Length: 368
Image (cartoon, rainbow, N blue to C red; front, side, top):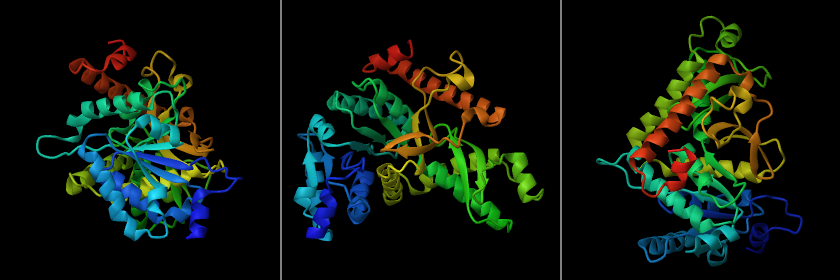
């Protein structure tokens, strides 16, 4: 126990950027994430504490205490009362934590679908950013729709340079899984693949290129047929749509309960990547991207523009992967990406026009 306590507390030469994690939202995914972190605590040798938020004077308080109590017997090597702390003040949470994961969830089903809950999520996020105030932990947004929620959090942040990023890792994994299954079905030899996914999370995403067997070359449609042979009939456009369909199909077949352990596992993998500050760890996340050099200021959505994109972590912060440049992807995909981003901005604007109350700052941002 002493060895584990020492591992949890960390050392004086600790350079790991993630030492204290806060979780806002103790629904199915939040609970699964807490459990996964405790199960894999040895993979976070410098992690000092977990902080769980619940709203005061609500049933959230009893639920969080109940979850912590329920988990305690399974993790007897950890002094739960010292390691997992329950807070009811967002300012205190954000002061304590260097990284805050937002895993809000609303009950879906019946007449309420994910899109129907957009405004409720916006209001919750606005309240969270108000509670965080001028503290500036890294915000990792898991709640869907990821890119609009990241934007709202950014707009209502009280920091000049907020660190707000979104969880989109599953889009990359799904696309890679589908592409590899194509290669296996057609008996193509390969050792490893990687690919680049851009755009919003889910509908509208675009796979813009693929790497095979560690090559530095990024293959698009013509290159794939040249490399894999003319009998390879698939395209990047098909891969993009199949990736969207894969996510929607699994959502329909498992919803509204979903598969929280799957999400928690990959959220944790992104947190592990963040905690690795060697400058070589790659991931796919949503982050604000400057597109003026690619399209010109007049064409792009009003900044900041959030989109899913390949990144490398440096000291816990995602930065654009230097191996990937949007301006170098085929012109067609650049046009498709711009159309997708403009369409998403238009959906947000239309929602705000219909539901004006409570979104004054967002309305001003879009000049509505």
